[in-house]
Every structure is written in C-alpha cells, then in structure tokens.
Image (tube, rainbow, N blue to C red; front, side, top):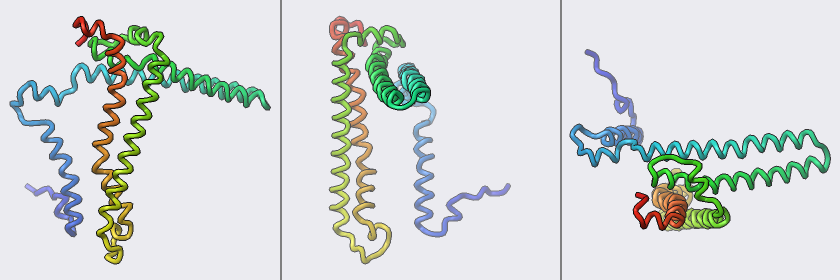
Length: 232
C-alpha cells in the first residue's frame, strides 16, 4: 500500500523541524494521559471526570446563569428606561440604574459564593441551602472577597515585576549588533519568555487564593458541624 506522508518530511530547515516536533509533543502528552491498559484504579481515578468535578461544573453553570440574569435583564431595563426619558432625567436614571445593577450583581454573587464548597461538602447541589448559609454574612463575605481580589492582584504584580527583572538580567548579555528579533528587542522578548515560564506558578497561587477563600468561609460558618463529623 501507499505510504502516508509525514509533515516532518516537508520541513526545509531545523527551525521548521523543531516547530513540528513541538506540535507533535502535544499528542504525545495526550497519549500518556490516556494511559495504557492495566492502570491501578486509584491512579486512573485522577484522569477521569468524577462526580465532584461534574457537580462543580454544574455549580459554575448555575453561577453563570445567575450572573447573566441579574446583569443582562436589569441592564436592558435600565437602557430601555433611559431611552424613553430625555434630558437630565435620562442621565440620572441611567446612573442610578447602573449602580443598582452593580449592587444587585454583587449581592447575588456573594449570596451564591458558598454554593461550590457546600456542594463539595454535602455531595449534592442545594442552591437554597447555600443561599441560606450566607444570610447575615454579606458584608463579611464581601470584605473577604475584596481582600482576595487585592491579594490576587498583588501576586500578579509581583509576577510581572519578577519577569521584568529576569528579562532585563538575561538581556544584558545580548549584543544588539548580532541582529535578529531577540537581539533587536532583547528586553521585551526575554521578559515575555520569563513571564511564560513563571506564569504557571503565579496562576497557581492566584487560583489557590481565589478558591481557598470561599472554602475557608464555609469551614468557618460550619465549624461546629465539621468538628462533629457531619461534613467530609
């Protein structure tokens, strides 16, 4: 039979071959992730989409639908109302309506913020119970999330600063007279490279900060039940 041509046969230089090799590495990783037969069940479980992951996906969809409902529909009403008015009344209506939409969005977001930890702890999704859980805790939770956003921003700034410093240090040994893209813009290129290498670390830190905040709040509000063994 005829032999199927391979992409690397058409590579004209080393750069093209390296690029094709990098692209092919993605499929190699995918095959390793799939794994050979006979993998122990406890290890294979990490590669499968489990019940908890499905629940968290549904929680994300519920949260997204709620956010859509409390922003798009009220915003449309505000725009329509402002269009029906004229002059200063339209401006005041639009401004106050926008503030009301922002406030409503924040209120719903905070009230649903413990839905994920609640579903993970109870192994089922109960929007009403999670909503009741945050009753009377709005301002405390809002302050917690504000602090979380600030910490996440600080991590991002630190990551960008370190990337810039490393890029400047590495570009010190490059002579612009050598030509080429890297030599022409050494600081920018090497800063981007350092940022690419450090991004997973700082993104992981930001994810830990953003995820641990509602989990910690849920644990604090249910401390007695957790100590009694009523939660996993």
